[in-house]
Length: 284
Image (cartoon, rainbow, N blue to C red):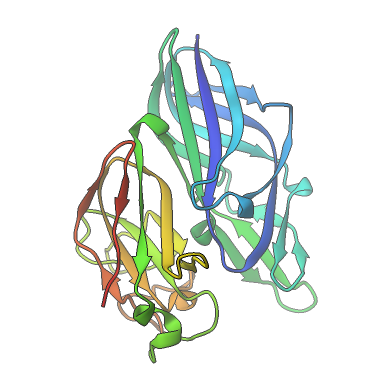
C-alpha cells in the first residue's frame, strides 16, 4: 500500500456567482481497467468552486491508503441532484454531465509501496461549464464537460503576470467594454498560434490548456492573471480583451463568425519549473 493526498482548485468563470459541487468520493482508475473508491475527509462535501481561485485549494484526501500499482485517472464522484449553479443575476440552476467521463482527470502515475504522493486536480470552469438555451419556459441548462487536469504537486509550478492597462477592453476600441472580456489562455510551448475554446476544432490548431480571468488587484492597481498549478514543461500564454465572444459552439479564431473575437498578445515559449512561479507580463 501507499498513501496519497488530493486537493481541488479551479480557474474562474465570469458568469457564475457560485458553483457548488456535492462531492461524495474519489475513484482511481487502474491500468487493468478496475477502479478503487476512496472516501473523502469527513464524508461527502459541498464545495463552492468559485472560492478556489488564484491558487487556493480544498483538501479532498489526506493520507488516504491506496493499493500500490499503476493508475491512469482520478474521478470526482459528484451527486448533481445536490449540486447547483448560481448566476450573477441571482438565478439558481441544476447541472448535467456532458458524458460519463466529464468528472475524470487523466494522468499516468504509479503509487509506490510505502511511499506518499501529493496530487492536485485543477478544474477549468471557463472551458468546462457550457450553457445551452432550451427555449420556451425551460430557460438555460448548464452542462459540465471535461475540463480537469491532474498533476503531482512535486512536478508542478505556476505562471502569473500582469497585463498593461492600455491593453484592457475599456481602453481598446475593438473590444466590448462589458465585464468578462479580459482573459489569458495557457498553451503548450509547441503551438504556432493561439486558438479559441471551440468544442469542434476545424483549423487544426490545439485550443488552450487552461484559461484565467484578468482581474484588478485593488491593492497594487495592477491587472493580474494567475495559473497556480501547471505541470513543469514548455508553455506560451495569449491575452484577449474580447473573451466574451469566444463561444464554445463556434470556431472563433482566426475567423470569428461574429467578427469580434481576437487575441491581442502572444508570448514566446518559456519553461515552467517544478516549485517555481514563472512571471510573464503583457506590455504594449
